Image (cartoon, rainbow, N blue to C red; front, side, top):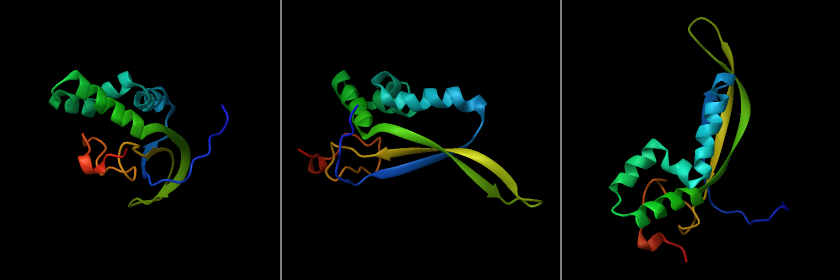
Amino acid sequence: MPYKYSDSKPVLVYEVFLPKSMSYASKLAEVLDAFLTDAGVRSIPAVQTELKQLPNDKERDMFVRCIRDAISGYSIYEVDGRFSTSTQPIDERTWAIRFIIHDPRVEGGIRGDLLSFPPSIGQVSG
């Protein structure tokens, strides 16, 4: 796919650090890939809780789409770190997972709380 140029835009960046362990690899991929499909988003426990609060399927579908639009992907990289303990430093390799959040439905692209729904009328972009 050809690269599509996009001007810079305001985003929120969330990074999650996990100890690197191959025993986590398949589950990590499963959880991260959940953000990339409607069914996957619906399987996230925090999302399920929010969906129960919404009165109808149309609003539930809009809520899921809102999350999908805001989280369009992730990146993973390795970080080597050294941490102090009471006896000696410990070296540890971790995975850093970076989510870049830009919600095209909200003016300025940033919502304070990803699970806040619906955005206030004054924030919705055209």
